Image 1: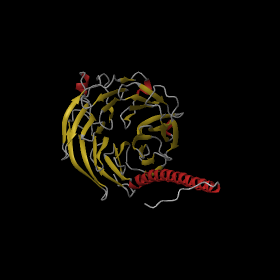
Image 2: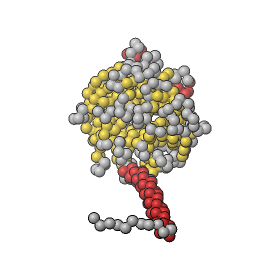
Image 3: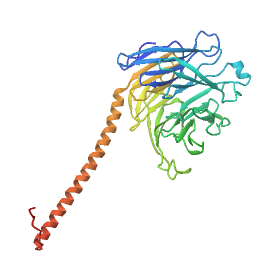
Image 4: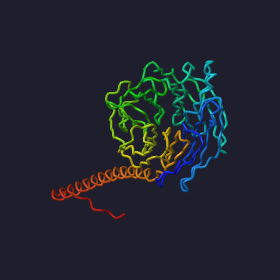
Amino acid sequence: MAPSPDPDAFNLDIGYPVYAAQFASDTKLIVAGGGGEGKNGVANKISVLNIDSADKKIEIAEEKVLSKDEDSPMSLDITEEGVVAIGVNSGSATIKAGKNEHLRLFKLETDNRIETQEKTQLFKAEHPDEYQKCTRFSPAAKYLAVASSVGILHSLAFPSLEPQFRAIDISDAGADADIQDVDFSGNEKLLAYTTPKSVTLLSAESGEKIAEYYPPPASTFRGVRFASDDTLVLISNHARRRGASILKLTLPSDIYLTKQQSQPPTRTVRGLHAGIKAVTALDCRELLACVAGADLSVAVVRTDTLREVKIVRNAHAFPVTRVVMNLSGTLMASTSVAQSVVVVRIEGAAAAASSRRVMVTSTIVSVIVIVIIGVLVQLLVQRQVLGRQNDLAGGEREEPRLL
């Protein structure tokens, strides 16, 4: 594909359609995808990419070719220790026989080699089109959430892969059975999952339903991320592809204390840029969120104001499959069925968001200092007035003595 005209964007034609991506570090990106099962000439691969943002270069550091007799990777996540969890369906003949080892674990070594560790089955292999749509580690890798395309959510203790609680099964919910996205809170106490009609919060430990919230009228949810322990960022797509909005839900203070909260969350909604039609992917790193649009754009949004601070139009030639942000919030990467990986430098947006946080913090500190000075001045004035009153009343003062 032709390079984007945006001066902060640079791309790589990786040679296969990409369906999954995640940053392993600030400058290392893991992507996966392929042509699926069959002899179509397009391999299934996992690729390790090194990113040089200063020179605007993306280089393939290592690749692992997967079996052509199985499906392409569809989702992935990675821990800080380099364990990569990927959703890869077994071959169709194996699935028909009732076996589908769709959850694969790999290890990213320090020399960029990708070593196979383990594969296991969670889904019953009853649906021929079922695949591992969502794969998400909790921030400290205490849990691993895996959701299927037919509405079944598994939460596993990690690294044992033992069920943390009984699987959530909404496969009978009709159109609402599609689990779109999953995420854990930073303190690993909440697990959120979205369907088109709701976002549900569960206890990450027990699976108990904590709360359920709904999208604005005539819209459906598409993605969810925790911006903080008490703040959710969500995407709602408007009916008939007439646009999309980004939402921020500030959860009630008792969200971790009671099953039925005393107050609803505070909701803030802002529409995204004209022509976006719908959002296909979302990611978030506290102060910044990034979205991919059906208009082939990618954009960066500040989570405090929900304003878009950068839009890259026509980032890809065909639909965008994933958008992810590195840990420091300085790079955004997106992938596409067009066999392209696009990285965008967003240091300016990150600096703007950080400066906003610094400004707010400085303002709070200044107010506290002013209050303290005011109190001290008041005490000093009161003491002086009291001293004068004592003098006028003929009060005796003890003369200083020399030692």
